Image 1: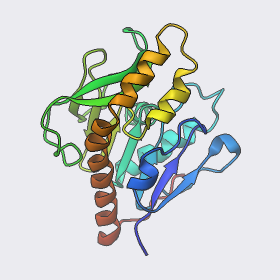
Image 2: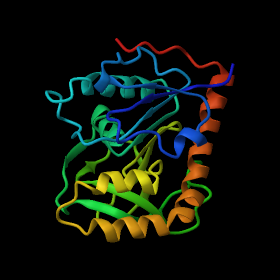
Image 3: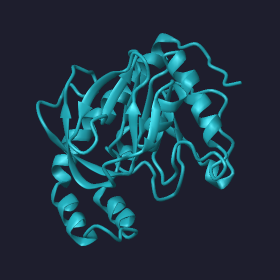
Length: 234
């Protein structure tokens, strides 16, 4: 049986996007629709983004269990990837800090600059385009985390904990169509102009982030072949 990635989706508007075709076998849990979170991250864990802040437990009551699942996966070296809110949840779960960003909303087509060697970013040789949509920021990374990509508006754009856990502030999974859905909520930025910029960059987005997704899927597959220890999130 092929390796399977456990996916936590926080809202319908922030789904797998490109990753649905790039990751292989996945099982998606949607707690906002009443799905129970799994007790075990399985072969690999992907936690997606969403409108919530990582500390808004009263409004999004599944967040504590998501943080616990992330912490268990990181502690047991299960391949893990957190995207935007997912990365912020992992930051909190592992002892870092997340706050409302002081540099305002980062939205639209940005640039990510790799700053360290990493198996998920090895294909990148310089600044690359990335879709952004966040205002909260990972201000202090967890102890021992390695910063692997940075940016201008917010410096903590990608990090790794240990060998198998990654967090990215940007949205490698988002398609131009998904971004266009998000941008309908904008009141302080020119949505149409941002949509045009993202759409024009689609080839560069695919070239930059498909290899990342496929590299993560390869880590998950190798983890499954090696016979990972079952992790129970109690």
